[in-house]
Image 1 (spheres, helix red, strand yellow):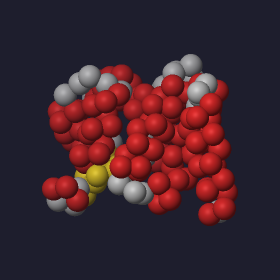
Image 2: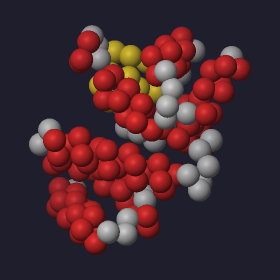
Image 3: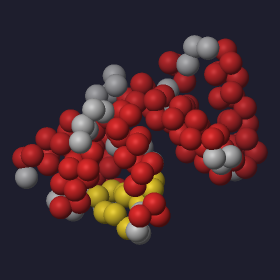
Image 4: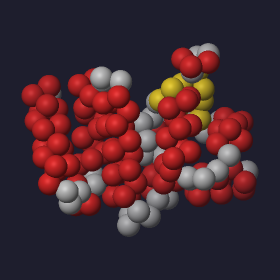
Length: 141
């Protein structure tokens, strides 16, 4: 439908978020990136078959129903906006992982986002932090 296509296009900047996060994490991340009623958007996307939810309560997860949907939404995001989008997502993923002692577990996801935005990272401490994260990822691969 036109409404859901519009919602996908206007919210495309958030689609490079991990393909699967718990619903609370997904909603919190989306809320922090755009100012919208996410419950209604998620419901509409589910109704249209673009995303699926599994699990119950805080164990619930939300993901794109097909990789092509995620890829298309990403393509709709302006190339100019992508680095900032990746930086925002990477920083938030890192902050979340640090607060839950899961940096090692999420290091590949974090460095993927931050490396895509590395030209926007100007503070020396953050650049050193990214280098350390890349070292950890390299040692783990």
